[in-house]
Image 1 (spheres, each protein chain N blue to C red):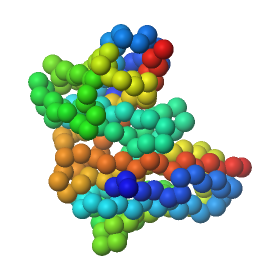
Image 2: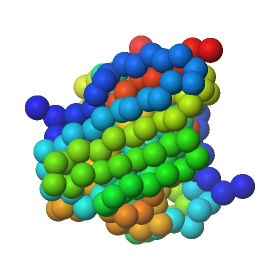
Image 3: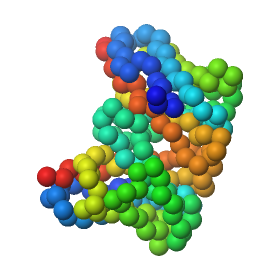
Length: 109
Length: 114
């Protein structure tokens, strides 16, 4: 079993829909990162969380440390949000990031 | 513009040849990382460097080598000992190696071994 699990693996939506991507992890962590990978392969960091909730534009990320779970929400989704969203955790041992396999999101007009 | 550059974007090599992937950053970051991405798998750490002239093995270092002679540069050599080198390779950097520091990624190099 992977230490970081994401669901769903694939997600399609109509423009304007509210999107939720989930991330569960099985290790103690010091931080959790949400990343976005565009079709060309480049990766951009969206959020770093160690507790609570963060918001940036239409993106909201939450984390529940006790339940070892994080969610990434996209409000009013748009075709340009189509990408692979990756969850990564930094274990409490602190030596490296552990990555989920990603959630592929496609938003249709 | 500050950022990370990787070259080339696509690379083709014959089996048995060593190949070096370039990674340069002008962000003045101390830490640099090499990851490998395969379909259906999460990124896996190959090597990382926290400071010039020092580097550590990641999870899948076998068949790879690196150097860190300059702060800006962290080239990765894929040797003939790497059994399955065809993959997408990503370089990243951060201010220093901390759980709370954002990693900045390069655009990646797709290596295909024929």
